[in-house]
Image (cartoon, rainbow, N blue to C red; front, side, top):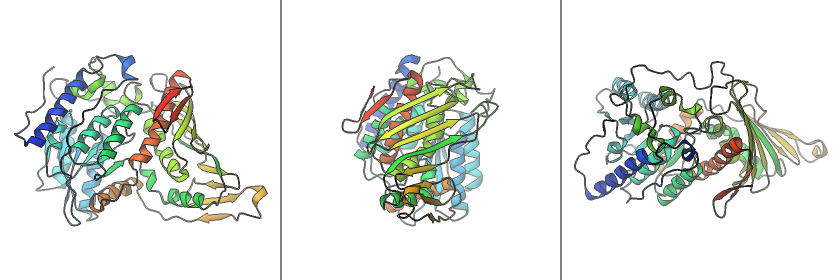
Length: 447
């Protein structure tokens, strides 16, 4: 296949070292697993360690200059949102660079940027490394497919950029631990994961109430993300017959370490339906509801995970259309999580304590005493403000943290715990075994 990687401009020694290392990583990504579907489910490439570039933290009034890696529907949506902040004078931010292996998707996003940001020069490239070598970019938003999250995040951190990475943080747990190490190795940089429900005030208030002992000991909790998609979940992503690998789309680069494979437009457009490229409901949907619950509970790391999964209606989708999870944490707390793409009636979002129950389905926090504790615990509703679009609030939180250098709301510690639950549940769903995780060694094993 034709090599479409542009030749980078002359670089300083630091840049040259970075580009050399990432070039090797790119080659390893393409050649990595030699197309073995079995290996792709369990093995990921090692990521390079290179010297860190200088962090470009923006000043209080400076224009934040950001790039987007991955300009599909989510990445282009993010670009619109950040440019809207600028148009509404909510933040001083510009989208100045785009990277995507698909010319059509990248051009669509570029057209939007040029229309909304007249006079702003926007770089457009297939090679994300060209974006990362720039010294004038403060932050990078990563909206690439899950199997590229780890490489893009680590390379961006290494290049001295603040990072907003779409959920799930990575495809596999070993990748998550590599990203975790990279974030901890660069404590001066801001790292945010795109799980926006963490911004809902009810979860902040729930955490405070639990710590204050208002429900006693949190025994078990439940949450879900369920919807009904008769046409098949993620089939709504369209396929463009004009996509031509080797001409206007670099299929091998998109595959990365999961290639080489024959061109498959369904995999390219609807990768969440396929086992090798996504954890499906678990990583795409359930991370949204697990993240704020794990934050509110503050129960430590997941230590035991079991999941059952089935194909009930959507038999064409390789990933499951029904998921049920049990996650046990260090404190002994158990979280029950359900996901479906064929029925939209989910579980009530709630946390059960030995003294009272906490209901979180609405905007507020509703605490109701257990019958045997009605004389000791008062029923209480903690009212919470309407913050509007929680995803916009998460985006604004990232921009604010880039200026203040305060930790982001959806941070690496929280994301790492979520990824343990995601990865172990995925393994359990496919092989039927229960898995444990040891926080001391950061290792998982089959029971």
